[in-house]
Image (cartoon, rainbow, N blue to C red; front, top):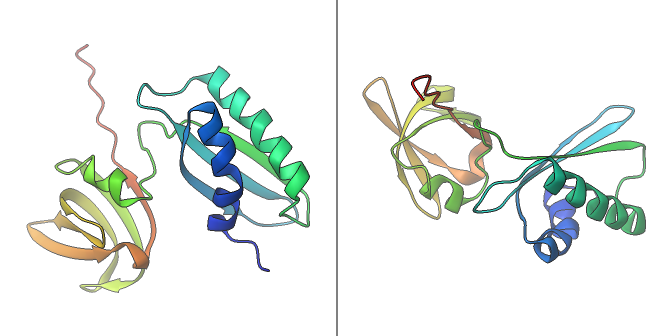
Length: 154
């Protein structure tokens, strides 16, 4: 069976839940040494100790299951201010904020969208870019991130 990001997330999810974490998303990049990047979160956020604890848990699971045939590096991180958006619930939580989306296919003549998230449901989102709204299917997204807002007045 070919290794997929959903397969890795499925392997790690019980371990994350046992520690009280949500896996926001998993990213896999290739090469001679693969990088498996796992973003975790809780309603109260995560810190370095949380990432270390999850990393130990995920390393043990990966050692037992051995889902990657070549060498890999496991990275566990918080989603950060430019958090990845991977699930409908992630999008629903940030309606009204700015997002950056990269699509796998052209939609309205473009692949990249950076604008306000106007709507989110279980199948698609609506993003407004330069006064034009575009409906983007989750199944056609390559990646999506929240555009961070920095408040320098605090």
